[in-house]
Image (cartoon, rainbow, N blue to C red; front, side):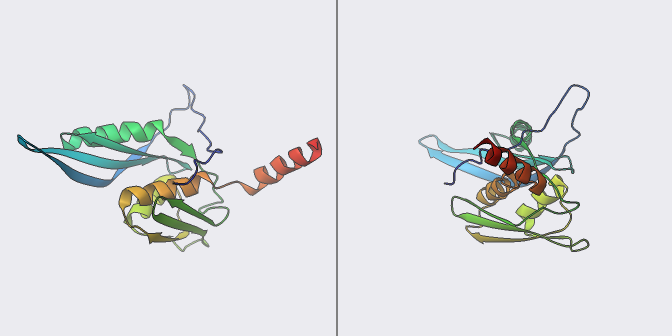
Length: 174
């Protein structure tokens, strides 16, 4: 498992700036536990939320009914929001990230390219507001791991101007 990105940017949310988040269910799984009394059925729901302007979150909800699992997944996603710096309709730079056995490559694209991605990565990109991007996923195609690898990659994206100013500040301090 990779290290958590220490530079996640929590979005600034004030009482006058309430986020209008859209949600999308990426995956619903039926889980069964076999006990002496029979099979106990439960559901998992992977839900992504985003505002279409660089704020995205991902959550996994578990419950005995699908609507409850989706509601819990959405609540978890709203608690785990991150902010992504965008360069117009794409990302500022290329990034590769890994979560467990899933790898994701996110590459900026020119205007008009669209979202070239599989279903899991596409849902996250569209909710984040990224309209032009090339992606490639390798390794395990498990949607949960793939979604988390995508979020890990987005959390590592840096704005070039902010990074330059940050480096100048620390080089002057020495």
